Image 1: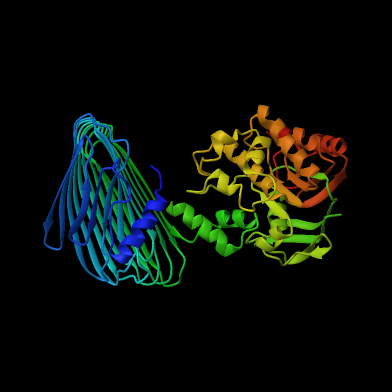
Image 2: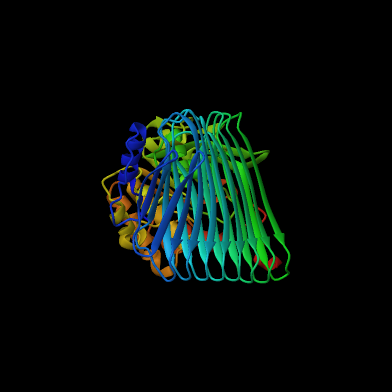
Length: 314
Length: 239
């Protein structure tokens, strides 16, 4: 998937001013929401998008028809112009048999001072379906935002889900991620989260991968960078119930301040002797060898740290 | 002379790793340090680069007529010293292109990769992470040394993990570095690498015990050091 940096910058400017519109053109299916108002919907062949207003937000249903491959990413744009308020997005994604789709979700809160952004998503992948969901956040520097993304995904046989959460710019504020998957035979999921926190930001990542069908596999990979007095908690679990399932939990937290609080609880549970689940977790300063390598190429320590962290967050 | 190490001793805890090292590295030469495992070769490389935990308490390092003993890694790098690690670090999310472009020097990332025998179109966008094989990562490390255009490149076993067909690329890269005016201090066990050095120093038990033209020192090493008992290595006849 491309980065769409230009479109993102346009959207940020629009949300700042309150003049939001679709910037991706008609070739891209999309939905654009500001607060609880649906600004626009564009459907293309094979995709159906329905939205209705609910209290403090919008409910969305997106269906991808069987055997359809959507070539361009479906663009979901959520955000709020006001400094204060609440936005609830309840979304339901149904991806048809052997369909293939990528979603690019931008959550933009450039003026946030007291904002609550709640995402409740349900994903149903039919047999052989493939879905990639990339969620990129742009926040203000105030830290006055509470982001609560929840995902419940059901993966049917041979389906695959890649879910990626990234904070691109601004203060994390208070982020509380709760993702869970229930997976049937030969399905695969990757849950990836990359967030950096500073000042009094609080970041919680809570993921559950349930491998309920033979040969199902899943990875939970979380990266948090903490400075100042930020807090980070990763609590991810893979449960392997059936034979030949494969799972992995990978948590890494980099800490760069004396008042940082970081904890990491990777959990694995195996309920079948033919399953295999592994985990790795680390909390610490930036790896000394990486730092020294970049310094030996002439970078100052600060710049070397920046390069390592921005690589980690990519 | 580009680098002069004077009366250098180095302790780890109470153990003396290097003992009264005196070493002169001439400008624009390839100078190899050989010696069996555990003699302090990598320690010496780490001291020259100024890595954490390798601060010098006895002795001094003179580089380009300047005492660099107390300088930081970055300060040494800015004076033209760099180090190629025996086992290089991996970097999540950093592309080979960006890694080779840190200094934005004259030699492009593409050219650096070509020198070490890697096709730029296949490698530039790959990440400097564990998806590279050990040999590929070593080649990328050498390419990053080329990209830096250093005055002194300290290379810790640049040939380890490299297949024999690729050794020619290592030689080509070292020759290119020298052509560009660099001085190269290599730590190696490899006869092929040592053979085209201008000078070899043999390190044994933390001391430089012999120096000279490559073949003479290499033959001495092969004939005498396999059963060396300076550092407690079991002699062949004892096995």
